[in-house]
Length: 77
Image 1 (cartoon, helix red, strand yellow):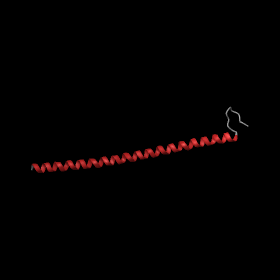
Image 2: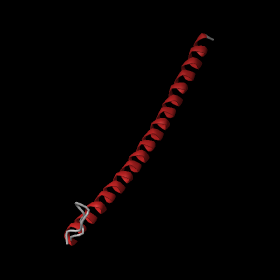
Image 3: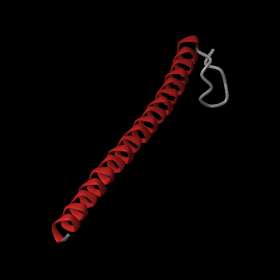
């Protein structure tokens, strides 16, 4: 009877460790996916900011080339 109890206890312990490992793996996968989504969102935001800055620089460069850059409130022409 004692051997059967120890065997049953060992089986339950093994199953509990195994099931915890799966839960940990699932949680880790979920965390990695969430981090990937966050990184994707951050990269998209950074790309949008870079595009906006490039458009601003392009506009200012065109104004400078065309002589419509208002430095003192007057046109350069």
